Amino acid sequence: MSPATRPIKKHANARKRRRLTAQERLERDRCQAQRAAEALQRALEDLGLPNNLVAEIAGRLRSQQKLLSKICGMMFPPLFGCRTNAELCRVRGWDKNLPSRLLSALPKRSWIKRLRRLGLEVLAPLWRYAASKSEATRSRWQWAWVGDDSVFKKYGEQLGLVGTWWSGQEHRVLSGIDGVLLVVVIGDGKLVVAVDFAIRRPHPKGPGGPCRDKLHWLQSMLDGRVAAFCRRGVALPPPMVVADSWFSDSKLMHYVATTHRGTFLVEGKSSYVFELPDGRQIKGHDLQHCAWPWRYSEQVPGVRYARLRATSPTFGAVTLIVVSEPREEQFYAMCLDTAISGPRLIRAWKRRYWIEYCFRTLKHLLVTGACQVHSEEAYYGHLVLRLMGCLVLFYTSRVICKGRLTMEEIIFSLKHYWRFVDSEVFELKALSWGISGEAA
Image 1 (cartoon, one colour):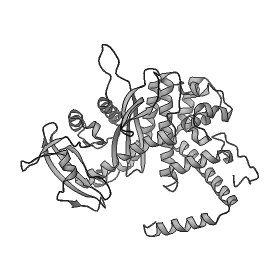
Image 2 (spheres, one colour):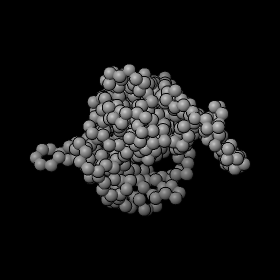
Image 3 (cartoon, helix red, strand yellow):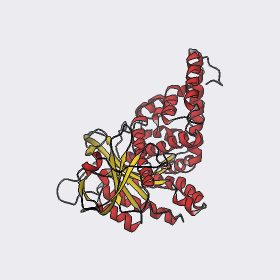
Image 4 (cartoon, one colour):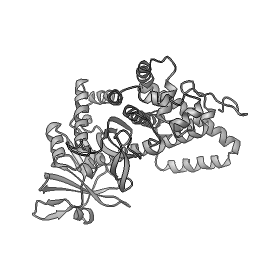
């Protein structure tokens, strides 16, 4: 659809909705919930979750009962009109101890292996398809590795996992579980796939070395995932890794450049000092607030940028990309000296925001914080299943529904009309309440 006709169709659809009666709007919303449930079922089948995950958990539990609907309930309770696992059990009539048994069925290493394997199974066919194209097409392949950490609010001393961490989202110190996530972003948010996850432990009190920080976690995650692709015979190009300013570490940037021959692009800080080729010394604050000889490119419409080469006493030779957009605060990104074009670096940087979108989905749509379990394996199971649920929602919205249905609309529709959805997979039976079975 062309940009000119999109607003016209939007207003036309809005007029049609306003003309609907209350009964017609109710019938339309129930039909949409039915379509969303069918799309989710297709996503589960395409991703292979029923065949692998359910069988593995059933073998551990030594149970012959149907577990797919229970596992989906652990993934996204809002689909069943609930917020917590306890409320889900009460609504569905399940045993109140069922969530704890399901989440602790696998050891934490098995949960992480399951998430990693799912990421490989989704991404490997995509790259094999691109590998059959020309070298020019492969060089333009829009594949970015994005790493970040986020704090999931928790209180109390739960299993030694809860600590005090700085939250960039709320700009204050929070008590909770700090999770480090590595995702692969295909295109400009066409698909976001979580490939690895880890929970950072708080620093122990008393003698002993500190626990692994997020810089070392991100390094080990990237090493492990690249090696896993190699074991499957997938020869990936040098990785483009994107992260925020908290990951701007010179050792990590040089490690990615030397070990993987890749590029580590991070947001620069205002306190960094650089020396330009003409001998001038500038700080990051000057880069963020001064005017530069701007460039424009059709690859990044509406964006003006300046590409600079400089020397840093900490990082060595670097490439700086100063970005200015309408109604946005000017900023700069940096990486080690590279020949990659400025527009390509800017497009890679814009993919970083999709990991924030992933965290918002986990926290707000999937209510990750509403969980109280009594074992470390159960906490890993809870977070990994939510990550899988996030991937299922992404796949449903972006691949199956072609962007016509957002994740928020899927959650809202099923949250309010799950009683009128007929789905054998989710063990849902439509309650007509005077509405025909086709409408429900």
